[in-house]
Image (cartoon, rainbow, N blue to C red; front, top):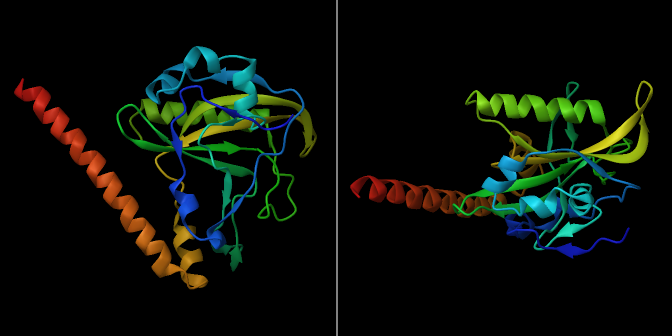
Length: 229
């Protein structure tokens, strides 16, 4: 299915795409045959300012599968590097795509990522896919941790793809839509340092930190004003 642009309450930007190309690869998700919603986090969707009713549908399943792209999204796979199996390696999002940052009604920025969305230049021989079982497990555990007050990523939706993947055995495929405050990791800093990009990344990070500080300041002012009333 051809990827299209849709608005279902999406308010996306992708500040990561402001970095130079070595930090990421722009690409769309690899389309899947017949995505179907397995589970949809309506409460989380509402808090993000999304149109819950329109996304809890067949069309919503197409969006969460990456077959349809929300308005404002700039899908990309992030590059990073670090030590793995005792060696320093070039790593990256081998089966995930960052769609962008959803700006919520409260003015917060949260990353929206598709996990299991197909191969990228960083897949290193993998198929870029995920199975239903592990994606449902991540959904359940991340939401349980959130309910316990433990800072973590959250899960917006899981869709089945209508395609099987090969692991130890043949398993039904799935894609998880993950929500996080950021997907910047230690390996992002290691990547920037290794390839001489620390200054560029540092400037971008300072700007993002200022954005976060201003957002928190506005929130504190709003809370203070509400108590004054």
